[in-house]
Length: 229
Image (cartoon, rainbow, N blue to C red; front, top):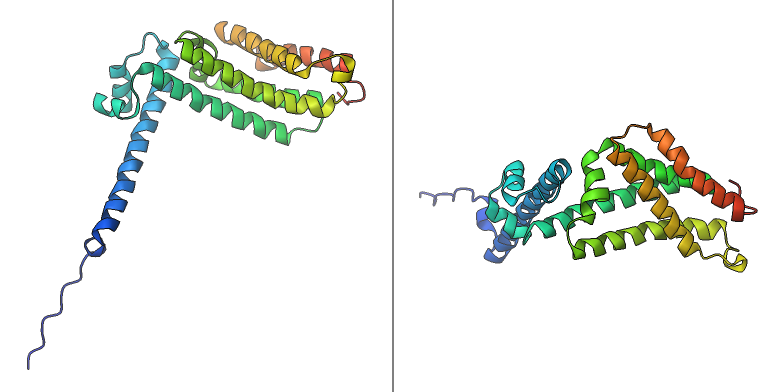
């Protein structure tokens, strides 16, 4: 008596239920879409950093990302949206690096200021594309981008406020508003950094850092009584 033939092994993908195959295919498609989006953001950062926002084109960015223009419009509806996403990506990078530096710094006001500012200036020096996008180009795009820059500035003010409130708990009793002080110090940081970047990084980082810290040190000595500098 002959035995019936044994069925050939079926590939795992062929044995999956239709709903499962659709789900897996959907995940793969989404992953590829995200990979294309990241490639466009990386290419945009390079182009915006090299040529500026107003000289950049969708075609150039797509060529740099090695993607066709139809994939650009899969994720973005135009250059302003792409610039906004690139700026937000860089902003997250700086916020995370600053948080890490502050957490690792000794619990002293000037040491924490040095750590946070040091990260900011090092990133500007080591990544000129970041510097140009963050400090210069972002102010030239449109009103929506100006609002995004303002919101990003508030993120850094909140970082500075957390430090100031710990070391200067009696500020309000002395007629001071730490919110205004944080805004002023952020302004100092941005103005000094912008001058440094526009000047081609002529001065060493430590020189710029020392000048920025002079404002912090004066503030701490004036109204940070009882807090170690």
